[in-house]
Image 1 (cartoon, rainbow, N blue to C red):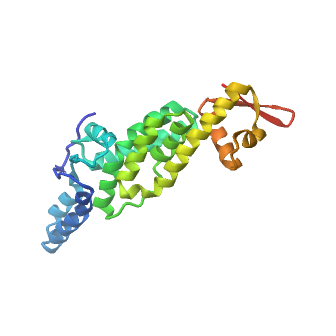
Image 2 (image 1 turned 90 degrees about the horizontal axis):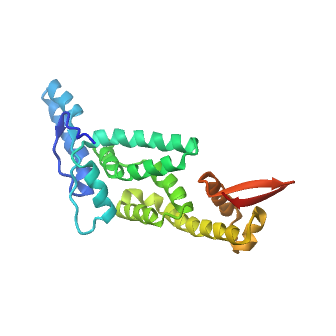
Image 3 (image 1 turned 45 degrees about the horizontal axis):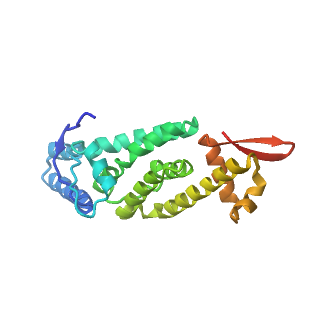
Length: 238
């Protein structure tokens, strides 16, 4: 990846608290330029970018340490744009049922979450994004594919950033879906084609809607196929 330095000011973002200070620093500089009637300085500040250069500490999850190495030295403005480009790739892959592409871009997007948070604190003094597709789509398809390492990585990131607390229920759901999808797969593998309506009893699992959604995701991920005999739906391994 080419490092992006246009109109950049180096700010060492050692902690998330450093990100939260960016808005105040920028606002004060703009206000001073306004008081001094310094139009050129105001334009310079508006265009000024911040280099993403976080420092690791003993509390930094191992996955975040690895992700940071891929993006250090770029500006948070550049990485913010890259985040939204990656989100579009995830949405397109989801639309096209290209789950491998979806998961590939979900992995890429995980390293863009921290600079995304910093960008929002710098420009808006808050972080209010509640639809991080790389997380909630990734959790669904990592879970039905049984990729537990990635579920644990996402869990570590969510637990590290307070700004991602709203995703904690999604983590719990993903681990539950991983267990359920494994049971569904193994039941069909051992017993052969299986009537979908009987899964609830077979699995001793009360939430029929969760079973149905998990089956749907497994079909989309290429783990299962369904077919009908009359009005009865059966599932088989793909």
